[in-house]
Length: 148
Image (tube, one colour):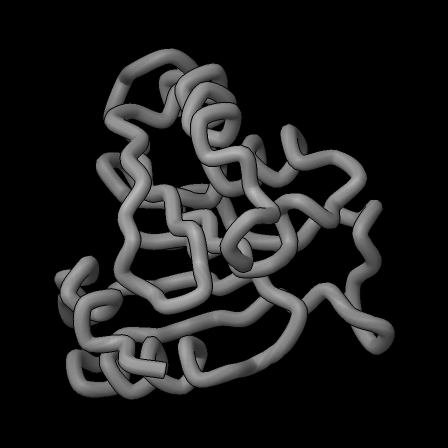
């Protein structure tokens, strides 16, 4: 999988924290970790699988602790996707981004963008840059909506 265009979505800075919420570690996790290590940043991983969280539980993350949240292959499977968006909003720093990635054809892209807007994420946009995946990105704006 060629991730060059995907990695161009990121502008990692020293000390940044990214959170990937997924079902497994994969080539995206490896690429993110390599990119973040180059700037003394950190990638944390919350896993939904048999050994960790199940699809009714919430992942754990500190408020305003992350500069990016990547939800990969979990959003459509979770029993409460609205809770996942609320948690993502709370853990993101102001002006940080959320990325939702699902295998092509699984995610209703327009409905996902509308749901992101409902949860006070701004400028949702779908981007076709990872082969085999639909990707939606949006931004948490300072002092909009939820005020966190």
